[in-house]
Length: 197
Figure 1 (cartoon, rainbow, N blue to C red):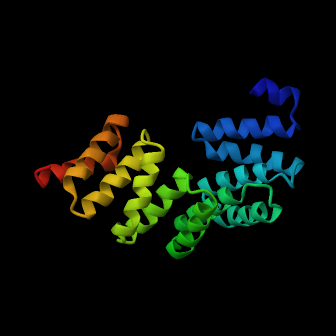
Figure 2: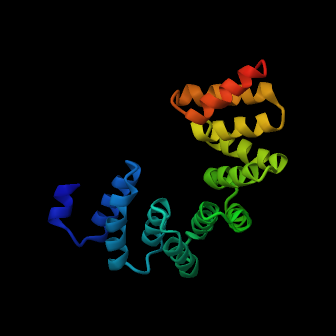
Figure 3: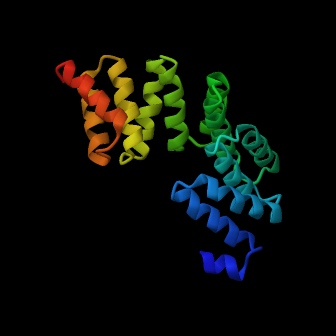
């Protein structure tokens, strides 16, 4: 990637790719300047703005991320569902579960197969103690992407809170099989063991 940046330092696709590589590696801080520069060269490309907004959200720059997500919606280039998802998750991070729910529901109205939006909405509802409403969203996220340890963990947590311990145990076992280092799943496994499950 460094060679590509050296050869074409102003190419928006090279910059976007560099940001994406950083993001996939979990280095959101390093992704931001690449995405920002790519968006500077292509300010009306919703996909670039959406990627920059996600990186800003992941680095805690919520207000700027929200503004970019709104720009993505206004551009109307087919990224609206992803932008509503991003707004929902950003508002959740900012402590606004009502706004998060509204926007995640908008995202799902545009694409009911959005596993991340189902997970996020389920997680928001779970955190609010609305376990019955959370459960179908967490189940749907797991059905869409069964090999996601985080989704399995949240499903297990919700089932645990509903008193459905055997099902919670199955979800937590799956989460730990997928990722044995998940601290939340380990704690929930211990709680289930204390309950005799």
